[in-house]
Length: 234
Image (tube, rainbow, N blue to C red; front, top):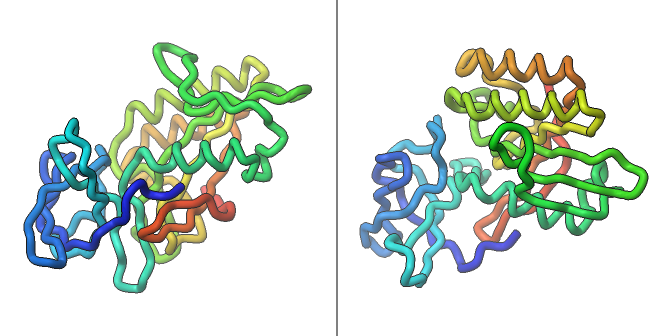
């Protein structure tokens, strides 16, 4: 998935009201960027961090910049836009570039199911059970090489797990897919100390037959692409 316009580097001044970020461009101008991330962004919103913004000239948008990446001192990147995983994964699914899901020929995003919910992807293939795929963006890392989810309490995430469990009991393939928007992690686990209720919902979903997959990403200021599976250590 390519960014629509070339990203520009900046320095983060502060993130506030969850969706706003004051930034200084490399040419010295101060701008306000939209932050498409409702989570805590633990470890990713410290003043002085080097970040990358996507400019836009859309007259319908009040803010002319969107915050897309954090660049770490070791040259790794983290993607902070929570809409990116679904866009990148959709492209990969339609290209049948995810080996475990490559036999599915029909990809239907945002399908209604459960109790007033929408599944991120409903996959269909001849002779195959329908696959209900819920996607979560993973950006937290508190130990080197280890990605974690969630970075804050998520009752909505627990609800999604419960509804996936219902799909599994109904005979469908229910898949919880964690997409790690970091290039510095090789393993994934749950942040059980941050949200014990989510961890409990995950355990119940697994007992009901919900499968887990974790996939990494290749990230540069040009775009985000699906990479190899990561080890799940839960």
